[in-house]
Image (cartoon, rainbow, N blue to C red; front, side, top):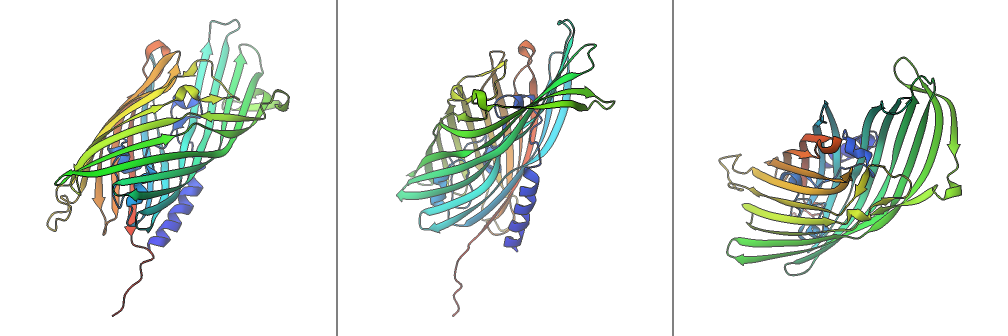
Amino acid sequence: MIRKLIIVAVLFICSYSFSQEGSVSPYSYYGTGDLRFKGTTENRSMGGISVYTDSIHLNLNNPASLGKLRLTTFSVGGNYSSVSLKTVDQKENASDFTFDYIALAIPLGNNLGMSFGLRPYTSVGYRIEALDDNSDPSRYNKYEGEGGINKVHFALGYEFLKNFSVGALANFNFGTITNKTVSYLDQIQYGSLVENKSEYSGFDFKFSLNYEKEIRKNLNLQSSIVYTPANKITSSNSRRVSTVSRNASGTEIPAFTDEIDLRGNGLNSTYLHLPESYSFGLGVGKKYTWFVGAEYEISKTSEFRNDFISTANGSYEDGERFSAGGFWVPDYDSFTSYWKRVTYRVGVHNARTGLMVNNVPVHDFGMSFGLGLPVRNFSNLNVGIEYGKRGSTYLGRIEENYLNVFISLSLNDKWFQKNLIR
């Protein structure tokens, strides 16, 4: 039955995830869009920390955690996002539902585990309109974007010494992003449409090291270091320029289209430069009962570069993120109360995203709460809520107040185990 569920989920998510925009944020206009994957539902409910590891939960941000895996784990997650967007004089609301990840992790023996899966990494989904009355004649501009980058990953984790685990994760990146700019001048029938399209492909990697130690009776220390080296992936680019007019419904109708030859200036094939990052995590807890931890991440976002497309009012600085959170299980083996076996999670994060709009840094602050609901044996239904704010209305920018509701199903079982008949 579990295997049938996995096949159905894989087919459904694969068919759906590549047709969705995945973002309703104007900030997805910059770079390669919104960063979609922020960890599993369990991680996000604890503020995004990935330092905590155990033998049954999947931790896609920390491949060294696979060294502790003892059960085969299948996990699939989705997210509903509601965003309130506002400027100094305007306010809009938007919402979207997306799938976050699908992954399978398998223990390969004592102290060794592997995982593979699929997840959307970034998403572009914006539509921005602007009227410039200061120019003569006045100009109307419309900016639209869609698409994103996805990752297929393969990871290994190994506990090579007592209390020490090491892990490595390889991602294959693929996806297409399309950006359109439409411009009209007042009292001129035809406008111009510039459509830039990039198809991305290439590998990137992640490495981690975990240390766990019982520092006193019923008190365990966990720590982690996660490092993502700088990398670059290939971008195959195309550009079309069209003369357009608008029909009664506001749709652009091309009157003439010209495919621009980008080979002359070397822009037909470029590189997307991905920055390096590293994080440090530390936490303490009692096994099966509670845990509290914190994590600090530094991202060299100033190294990000897209040789094909650049934005006039967007730039990058190094980013940083602080996360803290934990969980509590009142009584994990209670036979009398279901709610005593539930995992209660809470967390908070504060980030300097690395993106700068009009030379002003974009900050992100949020709080999260979650529940891990036992289903059967070691399987869980995980739900979480995250509320936060990104950006501000300062200097004509956009402030986002967001509410994310995320949910995942984690199925755990022993595979490849021989039954003994006596």
